[in-house]
Image (cartoon, rainbow, N blue to C red; front, top):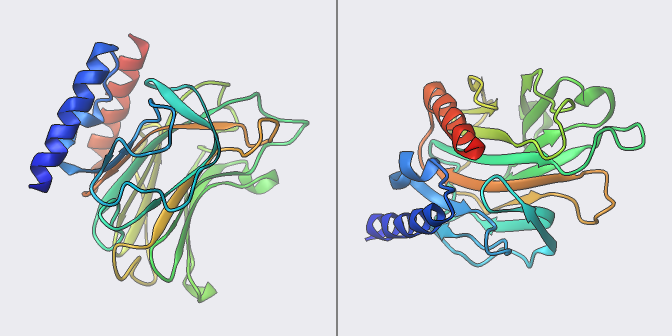
Length: 252
């Protein structure tokens, strides 16, 4: 029943998007594996498709929207979602989202600290972002932080810090995982995968969130769009194909 429901909703979303000549290829390539999809096109942070609870974990903070990759993007504020049914960190999966600078970098001579994604899969914390200052010169990072500091594991894409990204240029971020590893990819590059020191999660997890900036004059200045969670891990070839196909459609 769930598969039928997901397929029906995906078909409806594709029909609506096609009318605007903007169909995210993730819908066609991986329709049977989507457990969460958020596109912001209705100028809310509510999921367009959710395998679990659609209700937000907390009310969005100061949401604001702007033209995105397809339709609208989250320009201001944050959005938090429940894990059960929507994302399962105890089994292989993939998170895909697109991010763009909403302003010119640097801001007053400084590059902002980016904190677009955080998740709580039980007794650990997953953080994806870019540090400010010298630490953020070379990479976007993905940390798995545990109660025991010795078990923390960091990962990142060298040369992918985004400091050279132009305003309003969209970039695909991929976070993939298994119970024993995490991987990160930026703009279709091969996934950089690292082994964990302890299992990522004992169950699906508790909640996860995306954050842009909370005030229009904030130095964060990023936009987020086309959030998709898949219930399987993508290969390097699938990541590259999805990135290339998406760019082709955006440029049409």
